[in-house]
Amino acid sequence: MATSVSRRGFLKNAAIAGGLLAGGVLVAACGGGEATPTQAPAASGAPVTLEIASKGDALEYDKTSLEVPAGSKVTLNLKNNASAGSGVHHNWVLVKPGTVDAVAADGIAAGEANGYLKPNDNRVIAHTAMAKEGELVSVTFDAPAPGTYDYLCSFPGHATLMRGKFTVK
Image 1: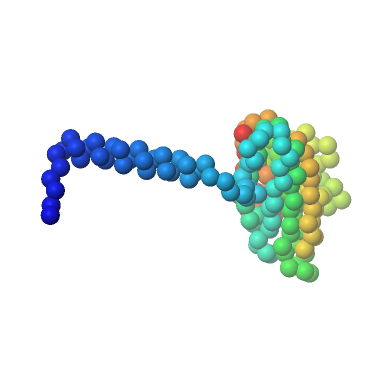
Image 2: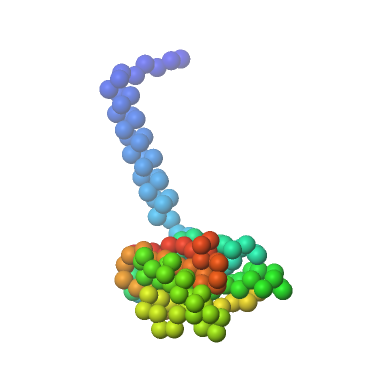
């Protein structure tokens, strides 16, 4: 048996259903769940641990963006997944906005003895040591002021491909 509904009745029912749907989405979006390494914890100032790795022997990080809340104490762990004997080494260098190419160029000039970073470079906010194949290296630092920063691998020739954005909110 078919039921007829006036246009006004239809619109009223659609609005109610839409409100229920939106409310359900809101509740679902606020549900619990564990933060992934690229997600920021809810509280500013809390310790944050980030995980990033190289993609095998490729000159790529497995993440091209990372995010933390302002005021956080950040520990970043870098895993070099290059195969043993490949000679592919990596580091992670967080730099001030707009300086990534200059930091990379100056790092090459600084050479291997300096971990391919210019000593006391005020453009560098934080960095790991150079990781050999299979190694895990870490750095702990205070998150800089809110904004978007760049990160890179300063090993010669890697910076063009191994970079990403680090956002502080």
